[in-house]
Image 1 (tube, rainbow, N blue to C red):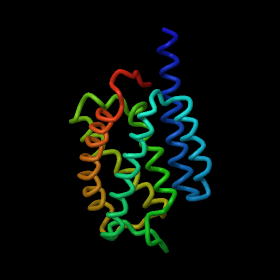
Image 2 (image 1 turned 120 degrees about the vertical axis):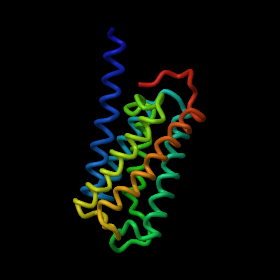
Image 3 (image 1 turned 45 degrees about the vertical axis):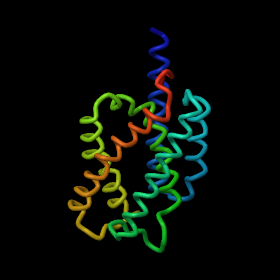
Image 4 (image 1 turned 30 degrees about the vertical axis):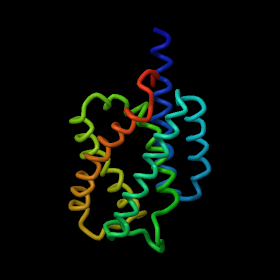
Length: 174
């Protein structure tokens, strides 16, 4: 019984850490990067159960940065005075990737749930960024949300396929 409480605490730390990083990076931008990297380092040291999780985090980060860069290049995303996506957004991708084996673990058994959660909820993060005026959209927020829903529905499935391939299934994750 005690072990289950310990796992739940680590899971809570994972999701709280991500949300703290999300808010800080979106609200304060690059100034919050060192703190977010500290949170990510603490995750890797205290919570990650396998060195292969680092490869998963790096893989998801590269994919995410590539997709968001394409969306900026296509002018769907507009970041003021920037020829590339902001560094804080790159770090945010790494922080998000750290949730796949832990607080988002409940999604790993269902592709349908991955599509639904990815498609319905992940785009809300971009809408929140739009509301906080850290990103602009070339299309209406509704059309942008729908485009991001399609992208994220597929991305979350891809991320869990990567998790299955890169992270040993023999390791128990929080």
